[in-house]
View 1 (cartoon, rainbow, N blue to C red):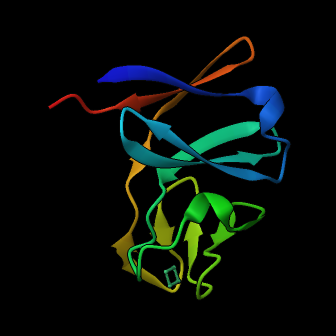
View 2: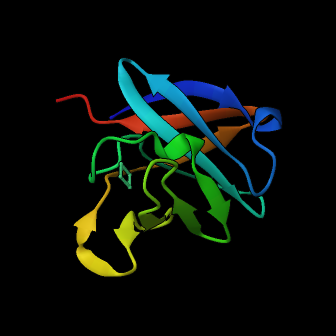
Length: 103
Ligand code: FES
C-alpha cells in the first residue's frame, strides 16, 4: 500500500464528490457528513465517472445512467454482486490521502 495525497478536505464539501487521480488510478472521493470515502472512479456498468455523480447520504448515483453505489462499501444496493473497489482514506490536516495497492 502506498498513501497518495489526492485532494484537500476544503475542496470536498459535505455531500459532494470529486474525481481525482492517484498515480494513474482514477479515484472518486465522497464526503458523507464529514467522513471521507474513496471508490474506484469507473462505474462497472459502462465506465461513467462516479466522482462526478450525485451523492445523497451514503449513496452515489452514476452521472451516466443512474446506477447507485454505497460509497462506504462499494456495493450496489439493488444487486450486491456488483461492487466497485473501495480504497482506504487517511486525512492529515487538510490533506486527503488514498491507500493504493502497490503490487
Ligand atoms: S456508466 Fe454508470 S450507470 Fe451506466
